[in-house]
Image (cartoon, rainbow, N blue to C red; front, side, top):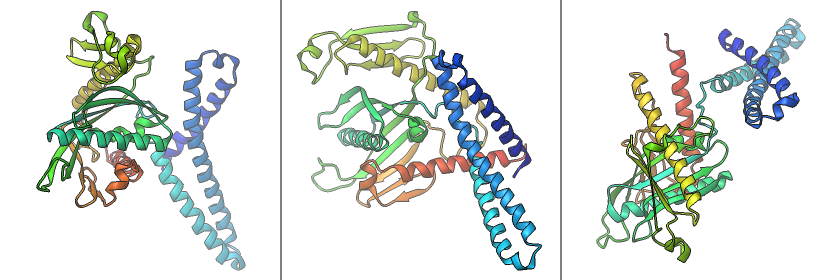
Length: 360
């Protein structure tokens, strides 16, 4: 094991004892925000500590096997034990390196998922509906909650734009690489001559801000308009001015919400989306300033990137960032995204490890 990694792990074990002591004190439970932070840290360090203990146990097993190897009668058994211990040390060492990689502070957050129809007219809007169903089905498989924030339906049943909030532990960590342009190749239902059309939608995945570190908004920089909701929703929704439109004047970002009967709830939801969009813009601007010459293999999440193609005639889904092609489009469209998402996360981790191993 790398001495630097071992030193960091020893420090993590010492910190775990500190966190255990803090959680055990009566005062920690009175400050719920602090208690939640400590509990989250305890969970992360505990997983790391368990791996480190496995590595240390394998080290001890290897040392014991070396001692046994001095006895000719035990040499064969000792060699097998030593081989098994070394293999375990290598496995755990690789896992520890991954666990020690810099963490995205947004990984455990809920998220806002925004899907917008792009090139392709009605077919693009229908594909936006298909993507929403795909992500909703995936969320259901994870036990997550999906809450509609706003929608702009198309005439044929899809969406010109739809925004949902996904609520679940680790939701952002799983879906954060989905931002970008998704392309579909298929024969539209409206195509009489059976020709394959290419359409596209853009997807944006924005982490939800915590109240503690939310963007500070100046009320003077917000224009808030109320209006009557349009579309289905019942007489109450359509006859009262419950819909909300918030414009952030410095950036020009506009957010609308008309899902709820309550103007207050619509305003609260719209503010959540607005804060997430402003934070996302600030982070992307900062990343652009500090980006290294070498671009991550999984992409920057830029909205203009074409990240994935869904080819229905060939039954394949291709992720262009990692050259992954799967011939199981029906299952993927039904929300079976684990294989795609796991490959993206693994590639991202490999890229991080490679950067850490590069000489300064």
